[in-house]
Image (cartoon, rainbow, N blue to C red; front, side, top):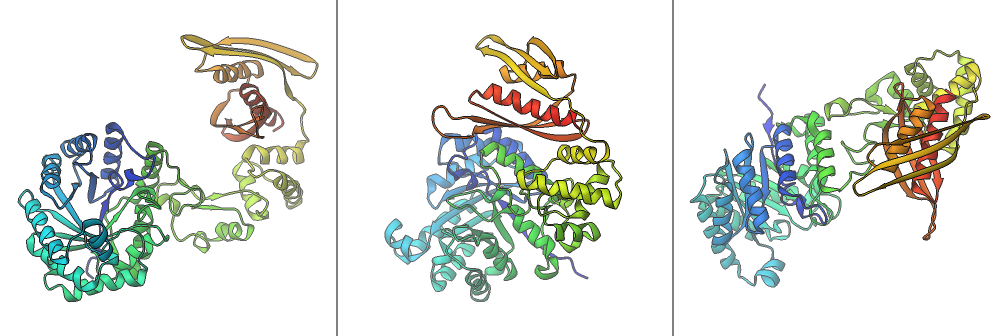
Length: 505
């Protein structure tokens, strides 16, 4: 049995991905992402466009000097200055590549370049030859190839390979292609370019119509040996082909595509989170592979199937992409099987009758609350087993302050039943942190804040703020909410709301 065909993964997060509005990275951030890409197993890292700015040049140069394990690539237009600058930036790499590009479609020839087809071929050949004079690894991209006439595209590609291009990249620059058209284009190149076997065929698909991954897969199916992509699919306009999606599609459907990549898929989620953190472009919850909901199930039918046999509703294992486990989300669509499974995981053993009663109360709660936490479920179970123990902490008054060169201070008075308790602490990173510490001291609870969010609950200058805190206590998660026109007060109320859930569990 022969080994599966290897598909090279060319990551352009640091070049095309950084062109996303608001996604610029500084040198340290680029270095961190580059190291993560090596750990991920990326074959080629397009580190930037060296002539675009001094900062871009320095980033590509430093990555080339420091990063080992992947080919480092610099982008250049087909002109001498660009190519010289690209080589100056990547020359120290363990393995260096120069990537030159020139538009070829009729609309670009006429309106952007104002060049004839003959001039385009001449310029492309000159650019590739100059790059090949610096290094053996040269990639050529006929920009907007997906909208270029097949006859002319074949002519340009043949000339570029003859001039020294070892990779020819076929970009769908504006995301206009369809899978059938991309597949046909790759087939045409393989059938009609006589020296095509001397170069690797690559594809670079944009996502303007939401088909970047589908177009890339169609290209792989028809003989492409390299896919250009970005982490989380970030990039110009609607973004690029998503690395995590193309990799997992090839892995999960290896039976169909009959190929493989060298990606360490367990690094997909950590790398996704790093790029999201560095760029500020957060991943949507329902994003394929790396979204928070990618391996989460709420529907009762799905949860019941999952508990019987995982593959009924999951075609991949969460552990294989970097998640710790499948999440059976408890909500109004959940059923008895998922509820009972979670109750057992929390350490409770209920009779069928008790499960039915808890499920009934759970459904009522789920109609009121969007998210059901372990603490909510524990409270329902304890109520069924022992009844609710009243021990409500209420805020009587508070003072909190901080400022430049001043240690934050918080003074709180809380009431429980007929008793009042007052404490003051000068500590923390701000008034909210100080108030949190005071609550811990008064209530005697050891609390770990896992998440905190403050947002406007209404509109206008006097809008009420809603604070939401996720608190871990004793290995169980509790979510508290509080509302006030004062953000600090809203946070105190939210924390006390969580503490009261702990008290009643």
